[in-house]
Image (spheres, helix red, strand yellow):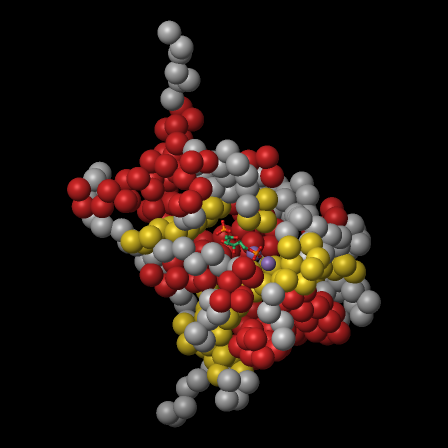
Length: 342
Ligand code: AHG
Ligand code: MN
Ligand code: MN
């Protein structure tokens, strides 16, 4: 047979047969596909969709919402709720837990409907990030407590990147697969099977304008990379910063390297910048499943016990050897006795 393109719906059905299942997870993932295809369409239409600019509202975290943040959230909510395949959900754009009107199912859906939305007006890649948890036995999906599970308990997680092409990348704990949207047939097709992060990467991604706030280990790592061939690393690095975590993680997944959004002296009061449940945990799951590592510097991201829905954390993820190096710098820094004033 010469025709061998595997579509995402067929991939999901094959996985369901292989691993056994009732079909609810497959149906939930199918709803997510439709959701992301719809958002992709809105993003691609750009200014023609009339969704540029600010919505004039703020989300629970005090951030100004873009028109497309609000629309993407509505699309997520409406499309996945109609399917009746989750019992409760949490979104970056909604303060409280939302309970399904259609289902008393056993899955919980957590998502960032539009990641990197500051890029939307300038035609740079944005994404959607999602995480799926099980509703713990005996818990009600209307209560925050049901969602406060560490990332190691994720059933599946991933992102859709609305870039020069639209790609959905996800894991259900059996490796990472990437699917590209074929606009002609309106279906995601498997184009990147079994993604593995190269262990040696030559790129790092960090918002360097925050340098004055950085802690010692971050500063040391970035400085050593920037010193290139003539520094302790003995080779040259490149720095990239898109401002969309989904785009950044995707690049690192395919090319290797490090993404850093650490806690620093300016964001520490909030716990960091990126949200644990629907940004850090899903990306950590994908990265670990691809052979990489994800830490806040001192703790594996997926082992953090969340205390709040919109909790934030420092994030350092990417190629294993690089992230191990940053973790070592944190350990060394913590082990140093505090300087004694003379
Ligand atoms: P969101 O658009 O969902 O609020 O997320 C933006 C996040 C993340 O995608 C990105 O890595 C980071 O914020 C960009 O931060 P800077 O503004 O510091 O560049
Ligand atoms: Mn985001
Ligand atoms: Mn967002």
